[in-house]
Length: 284
Image (cartoon, rainbow, N blue to C red; front, side, top):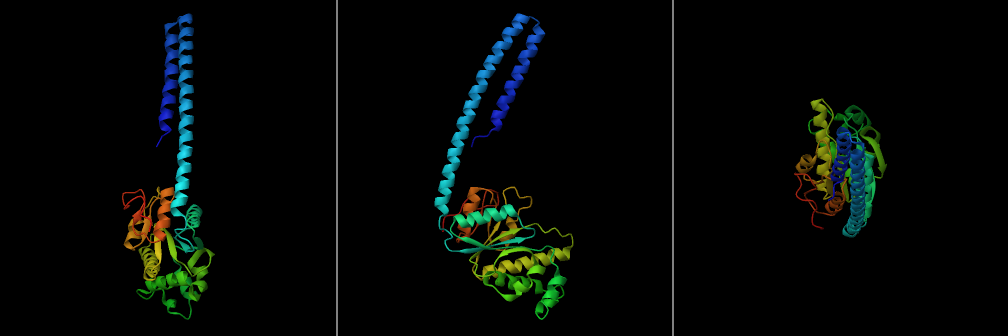
């Protein structure tokens, strides 16, 4: 693909040549010679500059045509891949508006619908959750070994199928929520690198997250972990460890196509990073 850095280098060379020409003229000291040299250099430079501008405009036009063709092919490739399917988006950590928009558009362009978007608080406020869960076994959260993973499974079940406990604990567990719980056919997950310096809090987060994902796997729900191509801390290895598919370049057109195919049933790690199985899965 054309890189405008080459034109930047060319224009810099032109300016350097102009400067050298003027300096040489001054050094010679002959006003007629200087004037003639300057005129010749300026004329040549103007010609080169006009040629470069014309080439840049032509290449920019070609790029616009290529991008339009890519967009058209993308729309054809993903059309109805997720027809009628309801998808949820889960942020493990702070929500991201750009990710929300990318996932929403990818799902909609594939014929699906993003019906649930939620962000799980980090670190988990176990005391507040336990208090709100009075009358259930989860009042012992943080005290009983293995209960956090069971809690994650229960929350995952209710996110996908609906249920009263998640509705009851929504304020204590989630930092944001939009849509509705239940009736999901697929999940998209963005996991942030756990920020807590407390090993016990980090362990609690991991147990809860593992429980939620294992619930989706047990229910046969297609679950896809995503990140941007420039993500500082890649989560692909964690997604893989949870038997999830992954897309490591959601900010690219191919990444959004891979997301649609993965939600439709293609399993693997897709994207442009070394950890990927390939750029795109075969259409299921």
